[in-house]
Image 1 (cartoon, rainbow, N blue to C red):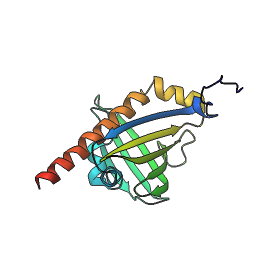
Image 2 (image 1 turned 135 degrees about the vertical axis):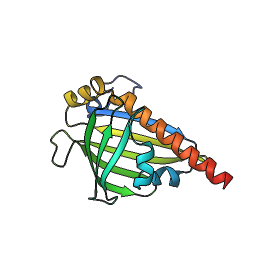
Image 3 (image 1 turned 120 degrees about the horizontal axis):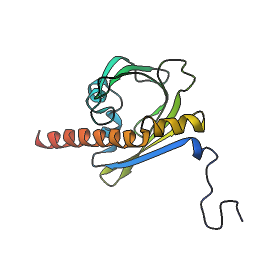
Image 4 (image 1 turned 180 degrees about the vertical axis):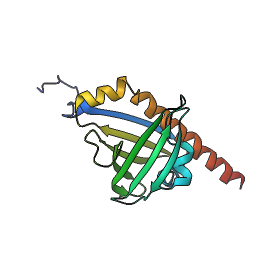
Length: 168
């Protein structure tokens, strides 16, 4: 019998450092994936409710970087930086996300895009360097709610693109 109890799934060794958020989006996988690849898309939906994003530079390729500022609804600016570590269109994107290049507290995220009928199931799995950094992200920055809101914004954005395309 495992330490997690009979019939219970084994807990990941990194579970206390992870946040996992998923959502089904009523749009084709290729379009949902594309929304992550270009500034014209990202600037329209990235971030939690009430936030806007200004991109300084974006190069969507493995080793490429996205240097941007998220503007909070209270006027606070958050310096952000992402480097893509894996891109497998239209199935998977892996990235490193911090405040700047070399940030010792940067976290890793893996996004997967799975077909779900004509819709897409997106999963965002984020792994922090320590449990303390994960807990701080959850408690201080409301990372779970913010992640859910970000995926909701993505869903609204690509659903509108699909609707406009159908009207086309």
